[in-house]
Image 1 (tube, rainbow, N blue to C red):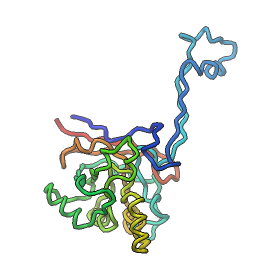
Image 2 (cartoon, one colour):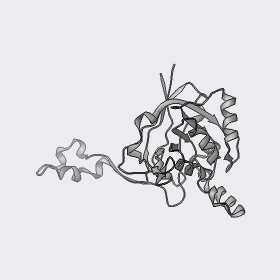
Image 3 (tube, rainbow, N blue to C red):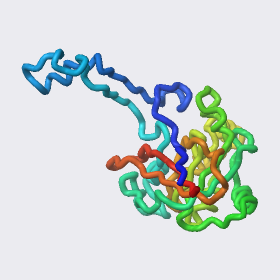
Amino acid sequence: MRLIDLSRPLENSPHADPPGLAPRIDYARHDETAEALLAFFPGVTRAALPGGEGWAVETAHVSTHNGTHLDAPYHYHSTMDGGARAITIDEVPLEWCIGPGVKLDFRHLPDGHVVTAAEMEAEFGRIGHDPAPGDIVLVNTAAAAAWGTPAYVPSGCGMGREATLWLTGRGIRICGTDAWSWDAPFVHTARRVAETGDTDLIWEGHRAGMQRGYCQIEKLANLETLPDTGFEVMCFPVKITGASAGWCRAVARLAD
């Protein structure tokens, strides 16, 4: 068995999210926290601690959409499946979050391109796989190559409404991307909306969840190391009551 880490870290980086949406992690070192530890033990002095050290601890100020995370249908709209209440991340069935993996390669598509149902079908044909309920479909875009740079957020193609519905219509409940968003980067969508006046283009891939509820993983890593098929994906989210997403350690498991 071989495990491949598909997750990006939570870190103090200005490039993983749009301006104003980045996480902030405050780090407290062992030499800074002895008094905090000793507050639980009246009468004990710092000299009694090994090396005079306390604990290492971090305080994070983060969105549930920072780092690699799983979006619940509730993120996309208050309803799913044609009008039912959208489920939150703590309600996502665990069985959705483990299954056979399928990797689609869209790295050749330009930044901002919106993948169609025909392109989705053609890529499945290229790899010789028919999507089946329980599959977890991961999309490799050009965005991964820009990770860690200012170009990351506006990079990569996005999945359109019809491409998303093509997947969910075949029983796919979990899909994912190495880009910042399942949809095309907003800077490109904003230009198309300004040119056409068509506001239905806004967040069209996400909004497909109103018709059929599904989850998506965003900010995946190392997809280029995966085969097209023949691996298993695990992407269990942190359980946050009533939340629209949860951080997850997405992992691929390959047989030796």
